[in-house]
Image (cartoon, rainbow, N blue to C red; front, side):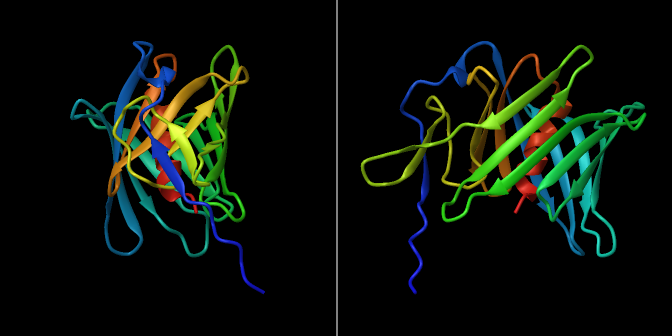
Amino acid sequence: MSRAPRRRFVPQVSQESNLVTNEYETFCVKRVRKAFGISHFTFSKNDNVIFVGTYQSGMFKDPSIHIERAVYDDTKFDMLVKDRNSVFETYDRNKVMISRISVNRLSGICIRSWSATLVKTDKTINLTSKQPSINENGQLELFFGGKMTVTSVKNCILIDDSEFEVIGVRKIEKDTLEIDGRTDFSSIDLFSIGVASFLSN
């Protein structure tokens, strides 16, 4: 029995997107792979590194990522990686959960389905991934408002309960993502989403 061909995801940059307005900031997440399942992550804006994180895969327990500010202070976070790299939970130094991100590959197509819960002091924000459109060639498309993007399963746009675009994740080169986030999201929220994009299956 032959398998149906997988639809290819093609990012498009020509159409309008609210991700390019003044209410959004752009950050960069980079990954450097080391030996023995270790990866180093950096989160920066305009080449100024804000957070660094180290990931090591675990054989007998769920792996985790330890996150610290690049300029040393007592701000620290831990991200737990669960369910075969499909669930990511970030905790502050007091072990209080500040985000839970779930990423799953949709069967038969080269895109991921995202859900993210971001915990704020006064509210909880639930986000889901925007579904791509299908062009006349049967290709899946997302629109990033003219910003640089290369074809990748890591590309996604997260929307809120009103279906408003609030976060965009774009692969721009190997092991490098750019994240466009609304200014009311914290740096650790956006860094967690970037790391989850790299590590999810």
